[in-house]
Length: 307
Image (tube, rainbow, N blue to C red; front, side, top):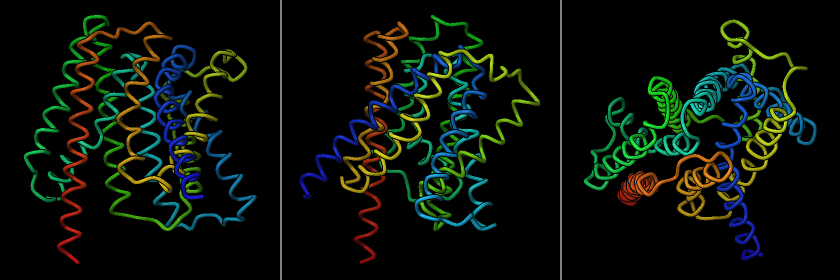
C-alpha cells in the first residue's frame, strides 16, 4: 500500500511539473486573445467557485469567519491579484520561458526579504553563491532574449514578472508567519473568488474588456485548460505529492517547470531556445537549488539544537 501511494505521488509530481510548466505557454496564447487581467479573473472565478462549491456541498464547510475573511482577502491580493495577475500580464511582453524562470526565483527573494525586514539568520556562503548564480542566470537569459523584442515592452514585461515573483515571495512569508486554521482547498477557493472580484473591478475601471459573447473559442479553450488543469488538477496533484513524498522530492517541480515551459514554448510558439538560454536557465535553477538547500540545512541545524 505504501509503495502504491509513493508511485501515485511520483505520478502526481510529474503531472504537476508538466501542467504548471505548460500553463505559462497557454497563458501567453491566451493574452493575445483576451486582455490578461480579464483572462485571470475569469479563470480564478470559475476555479474558485468549483473549489468552494464542491467543498461546501460535500464537506458542509461553514462560511469563513470575519477574521478568516480578512486573512483570505490579504492573501487574495498578494497571491492571486498581484502574483498571478501580473505574471500573466508579463508574458504578453516576454517569452513564456523567461516568465517561468523569473517565477522560479521566488525562494531567492524570500531569503533576501527575510534578511532585510526580519533580520533572519546570517547568510551562509552557499546561500550567497546561490543568490549570485540565480541573478546571473536570469541576466544571461534576459540578455539573450532582449534583442528579439521591443526593448520598452520587454523591460515592462520583466518588471511585471519580477513584481509578481516578489508578491509570491511576500505571500509565502506572510503564510509562514500568519497561519490560519482553514481547509487549504477551501481557503484557496475563497482567495480565487475574492481576487476575481477585485480584478473585475480593476478591469472595468482601468482597462478595455471584451464582452463575454465576443470572446473567441480559442480564448475559452485557454481558460478551460487553465481552470481545469492549471488551477484544479495540478493543485490537487501537488497537495497529494506533498503528503506522500519527502519534501525534497515533492518540491522538485519548481526546478522542472521552467524547462517544461521553455521546451513547450519552443515547440508551440517557436520561441527562441539557444544554448545560452539553456545554460542561463541551468545556472538560475542551480542557484535556486543552493538557496533552498542552504535554508533547509540551516532549519535542520536549528531544530536539532532546540531538541
